Image (cartoon, rainbow, N blue to C red; front, side):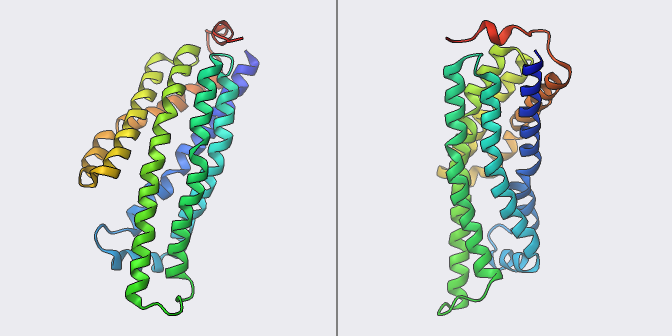
Length: 236
């Protein structure tokens, strides 16, 4: 049980760190700098607060790296519960990492265009068009990433329920969280006008990861009565 507690604590702390840091670029930076439908004001805000925008870039890079270690930590925790599901969870968890890094280049391009030296041979209107394109591509990248952010939660929820390391309601909520990510992705890609409505409706579902992290951290600190559950479900 000491090994299970240690692995649960490690995975929970990594997940908690991701939950705390990821909203900086996904939520906080856009809320402070971006103005929907007004690229001129958005660009002016970025140029007025370059440090905040660059912080968003750094947090994206940090989260992409952290996702690798988190996925491996969760695989180590659940691999004896159901190895096939654990492998599927790990594959789905690692697949978006390269896309995450590539998507950061769109923000780097915005920083270069607005915060660096003015590109030679480009008019102000052309620079603004390039900024708009880069930011649009970044948003599209997030929509694609949400497919994986949702899909990997399905095997993770199944593993959590089977292991009995967290309450079943937490595993179920995690599954609903995965559905919410997929709904946000589909809406963002094919029906952007519904983005606001779906995002608002998805807020309660997206607390599933928070609940899972809290329960997993509690397991890592205090242990769990079902100490033999993972071994009982092990796959040879």
